[in-house]
Image (tube, rainbow, N blue to C red; front, side):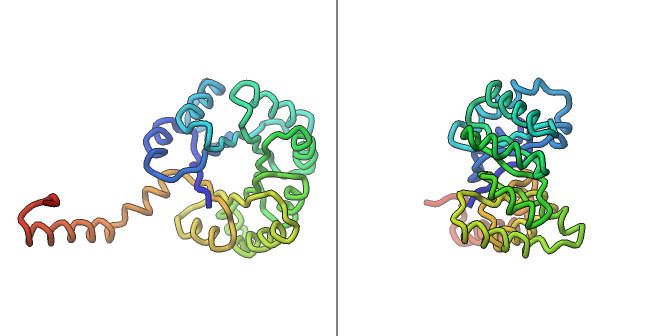
Length: 223
């Protein structure tokens, strides 16, 4: 089970990485847009410094043709570090680029997955991670959980070295559903994790425990 932060916000990554069992960071151009016109490569080198070498870093390419995708991946590896996973949209040209990059041993995350066929093709192309878009698929009236279950069975049946990393979540219930359906990883905005632990019921329970202790012993610490 892997939980990744879907953000490029340095403050959030720096604050929350020590708090949560986070396995890495994922981004895409839409996420980067929220940070403004950053010094792109320096920004991601800083993210690597924060998360360390043992967590994964997934950065999306910009080109849409196979040769351009490969060139983008090479640039990411050269400018940031050799452990970056290139996030590649699962299009026809993307599949070709995935195959070329896997022949070189480059880490690949297949993204923008909306169907079982896309996922299966990405697995066959050698992708290390495949990222079905949970909420976006649900918004299109696609049974996302069933899709993830089918892909998990496909990966298991063929013994593929690939993990399902579900993405695009609107709430924590969708995150739980993705894991229950067979996802090995999820990537989500850190605020969703924070929301899961800040329920008024949780706060009320913790406060009640503290009050009961105080009523019994008259202190707020263990003896």
